[in-house]
Amino acid sequence: MKIEELAPASGSKKKPKRVGRGPGSGHGKTSCRGHKGQKSRSGASIPAGFEGGQMPLHRRLPKRGFSNYPFKRQYAIVNLDRLEKIETNEITPELLLKEGIISNLKDGLKVLGNGEIRRAITIRAHAFSKSAIKKIEAAGGKTEVI
Image (tube, rainbow, N blue to C red; front, side, top):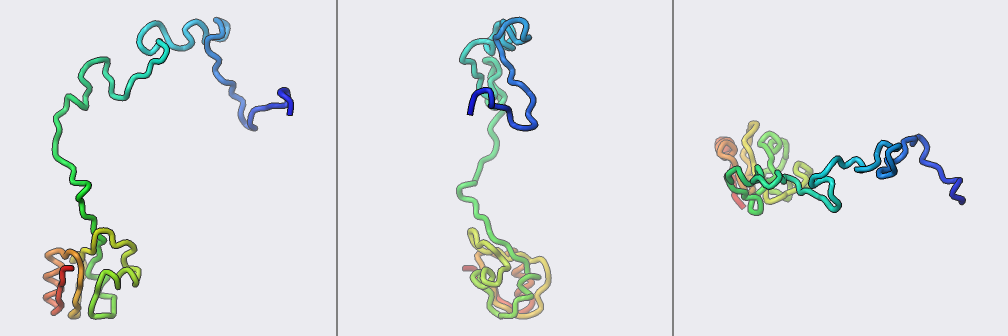
């Protein structure tokens, strides 16, 4: 390979901007940096949110609320209408994983009350909504918190 055989990638025609190469290039003298000021100096890098020494917006505004993120519990949720379709009378999180109704147990299973349940079943889960407990017990079933 020789230097005269080198060519740009096919479809690429734009030449790189060559700054500081005299007035004929259009990018001479100040090399596209303008006149004076912090951004014209070498080594200039201004952090995000810097407002020229004025107190930045993120420090002027008050702090509000709190984040419970490290302790947040995220449940795998399932509604009663999905549980109605399972034939067994005892439903556990392991059974739901095996049946493919939930794909990931996360921090536990929570049963929500969407749908109707017509038969008496025992459901073991980590949490239940109030409406789910009411509907399960109305059908003669039991709820067990694991």
